[in-house]
Length: 316
Image 1 (cartoon, rainbow, N blue to C red):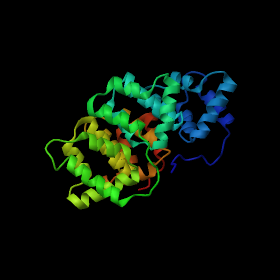
Image 2: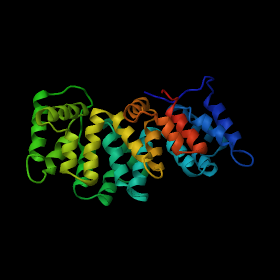
Image 3: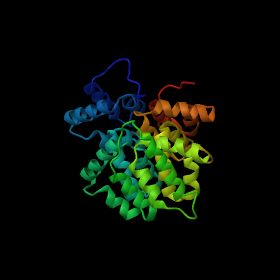
Image 4: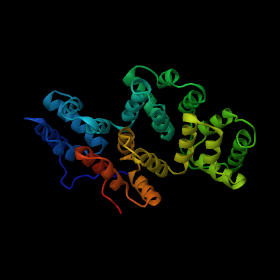
């Protein structure tokens, strides 16, 4: 469900390119005009604007944006421009090679659908001339490394059909591998969490709760730790309710002293054209205030305007 508001007056990609060029000319940049155009164009339109701009002005639009903008706004706009798969590849490349952040890498990998992952793996190789698996092997180790590699390579169904018998077997196997024994059999957790569809994992979570009275998420948290735990929790939460999962990630990024802008940008930009309405609804349900209001109070200037434009109108 896209929340990107298409402007009432439909302008052509060519017009947009001309308006952007005009906004860049002269002293300083008309940042408000740039935001007004780019924040209200969907992925297809943005790609067309980029190609028109290059044809007309023989220069890459993203290079120009990089020169004209700065700070968090620049980071957010440059992440917004590409299509989702390329954007994920950029985030992962950054998290695995430049500004090492295994938590962010784990979040992106474990919250994407199998087809998104396929696309991302191909693009990563095309863009960086290396396999994403190699980058993971370089940075991660132990349970996390094994888990991410398995998650990237195991084919999973995207269908909604669920085999009840298998669901119960998985719930029992996870109980045996975790809560029932001393220590944890990580291999079983890995095999089930990496090999099952979202619909199946959601059903396993429900079955686990009704069979053992504890939630699967709680069991994961008491049996595992670190980024491996983060990966398992991401898988189970995105199987049950991705909107709720991302609402929580955003809340954490804004809670307490200071704001984790990197997380704020990553989540808002990557989910704006996927499930932002659901994230906003879940956020409001849990915190009794709107995501827009919290983002408004944690950010400022053009950066704030840009993020709020991606969030779309306040529903509450």
